[in-house]
Length: 459
Image (cartoon, rainbow, N blue to C red; front, top):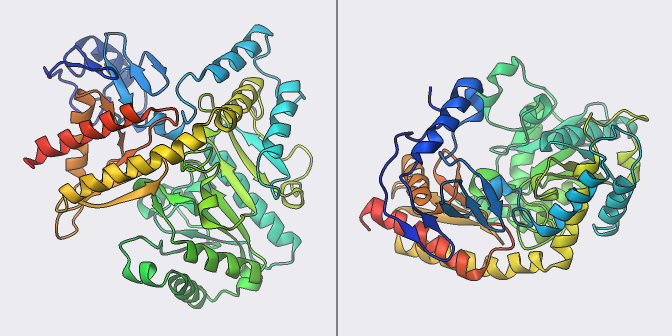
């Protein structure tokens, strides 16, 4: 079985040699096939499906293989390398830990853990008084589910209901899968948590959601309450929101979030933002929820929290973070010295080296160029969504039917031309370069994307 959804037959492609890109072999590289074949033989197919590139090194906003090819990276390794691949601050911090040496400390105290947590709390909004560190984003969303329900019990609610949004994704573990909406992805579970509910997402193509966002929220919540026989004061513990919906980089209308916030406060519900993709500068703000003008109770972060090694976290007030008993909410690798060192250096780089400002400045350029691309191909590109250095280009035909196969071909051709984009497997091409990218390289990458659309569609 192939280790990729893409052909593993090397194709001769035009050579590329620019300041930022280099393609000097057939693609996929013939010498890379043994690596891909070993992965196919030894690893679950569930791990596969990406473009057939075998990475060797990555620095800044560029990825290289060992055979001389170099790509502009518009993926940030799925929104992780916000501070840039191999950011010098992070490399130096990891090296200091290696040189001590101190690679693991279980849940014992370390100086780097204390230093990171203090810096994190000091440099995030005031309502985030404490944090709990984990290794994977799904652990953080599971923790949020637990904390919202513990808070509901403490405040006397009779049921621990959580309201999430259709189409959102919160992780691979059981509770996170339950919070996610895709029914096909939950068939293996065998049952559904009766206290997890979903309401429609206010997509920008839903007319009522665009025209009257607050009314759309109120109407869909009223429908949920009536259908399930729920009393929000007694039966609902909180809301779980992706800051933007992942596959489409679709943000909520601000008025929708304000209406949700008012409802939550009225009924004693907590609000949690899942900032896995949106956090740590990606949207041109430190956290993506800041675009909405409200403050959540809990925030789950991962991916860009370290720009490198596995690190996730949940932030919130002491009154909620301290609800679990002593030693009752951590995992084996929580707060390990390597992750704490990387997390500290990453946050310092974002705040002190102008990377968030760069994301905001170049984000305006980025979206203007992508919107110009949409104007040139209105019969193929229905929307460009996102903020800062996150964007999704949505491909549909004039009748609104999704063009997922075209997106697959665009991703593959872009790879052959020296650009890596996020392959979603559906009708969107997602773009998320490291926040250290230059305007010159950003423009070059968008030009490559446009050339792929033009050449594949005859436009």
